Amino acid sequence: MKPIIITCAITGGIHTPTMSPHLPITPDQITQASVEAAEAGASILHLHARHPETGKPDPRPETFMEFLPRIKQQTDAVVNISTGGGLGMSIEERLAAALKASPEMASMNMGSLNFGIFPMADKYERFQHDWEKPFLEMTKDFIFPNTFKTIEYGLRELGEAHGTRFEFECYDLGHLYNLAHFVDKGLIKPPFFIQLIYGILGGAGADPDNLMHMHTIAQKLFGDQYEWSVLAAGRHQMPFATQAAMLGGNVRVGLEDSLYIGKGELATSNAQQVAKIRGIVEALGHTVATPEEARARLGLKGASAVSF
Image 1 (cartoon, rainbow, N blue to C red):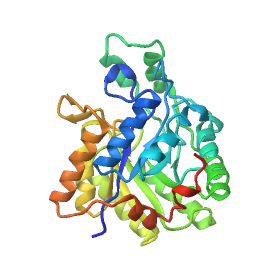
Image 2 (cartoon, rainbow, N blue to C red):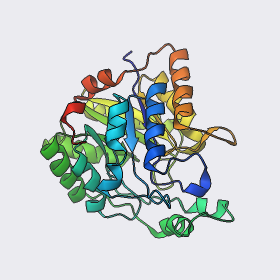
Image 3 (cartoon, rainbow, N blue to C red):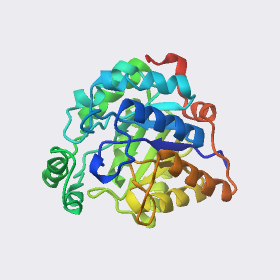
């Protein structure tokens, strides 16, 4: 078995500040959380930015540049910049920070879906900021658009032009076939990194059979050309990461995907989740990949070739 790559998604663009006091918001908090996660065993850091005063997802490159250089200086982890951004952003906004930073890795959503986080709006009587409740509620009538045109735009403008490689986020079975389409066109070349995602309303449900089936289809489509990883939302995070590790896959944790460390218990940090899954991985008899091992397996260009 190859060492297991742990990705940590530090803050994301889904949860809002009201939901947890431990969600990193400011550049200082995102920097600290990233360094701690890397020290705990994460070899890849998946990063979004937030407005430092309101916590709202922030696409501005200048906000990213307040923490990207500091993370690079303090850790050798691979920096992976989201191109999902925040729900409702244009593709130009979503790509702006990555185009500025020219990172080793970026995420790429492989299909459109009804990305529904509106049920969370009913779980809180009061919100800290005026934007939070409308942001959640608007997803009842919202499609997260990732068309063939926008995917190709990202692959060319960021992938071909900058040498950035991708975490291909697949929320459903059809997204694997979308990925295969671009592999057939020659726009995606091995080795590539697939993130199988479960538990988002509008995507594949958090049923272990879905994981097994999508993994089987990925094997049929891509053979030995790819690395695969699993994330699951909320309470499904650790069980699905454990299942992936048992199958020899890689794993993703972090406060973007779940705010909890156990039933009813908020995680106090991203590092706490990384340490928990690392303990599980090692208890299963596996080792955890270093950043350099992740770079070699994913064919990354190296930290010296980024623009931050």
